[in-house]
Image (cartoon, rainbow, N blue to C red; front, side, top):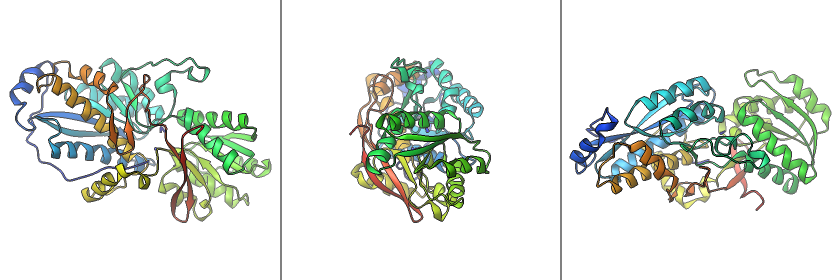
Amino acid sequence: MRQRSLIAVTAALAAGALTLTACGSRDDKAGDNAGGGGDITVVIGVDSPLTGDLSALGLGIKNSADLAAKQANEKKYVKGVTFKVQALDDQAQASSGQQNATKLVADKDVLGVVGPLNSSVSESMQKVFDDAKLVQISPANTSPSLTQGPKWATGEKVRTYKSYFRTATTDAIQGPFAAQYLFNKAGKKKVFVIDDKKTYGAGLAGTFKGEFTKLGGQVVGEGHIDPESKDFSAVVTQVKSSGAEVVYYGGEYPAAGPLSKQIKASGTNIPLVGGDGIYDKKYVELAGDGATGDLATSVGAPVESLPSAKDFVANYTKAGYKEAFSAYGGYSYDSAWAVIEAVKSVVDANNGKLPADARAKVLAAVQGVSFEGVTGKVSFDEFGDATNKQLTVYKVEGSDWKSVESGTFGG
């Protein structure tokens, strides 16, 4: 999305923080307080859907970034700096995202932004952040064009915005990964492809279709749905008469769950398969009992298989967040920690102070970060994409998702 699999934590720190209001005054004030154990406030902005249908994912992003900031403060990881999180609700709407980007840019204490969830929202934010030299790291965006330009599929890759990074891998890998699994491992040769016509959904469906047909699979039908409508009878009828062995859906769980339920209710007992946009327990609830056997791919390895994630899970639980970290929690934590690492690098290189051009310096530092995070090795390539290309296939079993297979595209 985007648009998704891991975790975040811990207790609040009361920090008597000095908030700087003028970027140009950072040097002097930072110098006065560098030894104060946290007297300078650095804000990490978070943008995600905190309300609405996708809030289960958005709240997990917010909480996980919050956990990273709190742990950095507890450890006094950057001497003299206290990290705070400012979370804004984009409601999964591009217009709201752009407004939030403008608001975050206006706050001179914001030195990095985590988010958003949706690729379509990110498209509205990138230029705002880039103009301000404010680094943006999405834990969930998967549209390849965000980092590699609109002609990426033809091999003409151009990084349009140097301020944009992501810790999730892209649909250029996720779609083909799903196609390889379905064709080679699950033995599915006939597919009906559906998408929601949005940036994430259409792009994911397109990369899946390209690889599936390349492998020798047959696309027996294609359709589009309006995700705001919950009556999908027209496309369900097409699926039923197509002879498809599987449905591949490009989109998110609020529509995917009801779509799967209606397909099964029609008497067509074939699995629905999607990307990280459907990998959430809410999908299972919406799809109902017939969801058993449905599949999803998601970025990263399963949390339970990563030693690096155990502390994150424990700390998130200990912190008492009301919402689950959901699919992008670990990636959100790592995104926030990448900002923290960059701030530390800048402060250490400037004699324990924040420079006047802190945003530009932090942006440059993010390009070179490299650390072992919750999701594994965290670093970025020349396009700002994650160097970690791990993906996992999940299957609905009972009331939740269970991991089936992990790997990399082509691996």
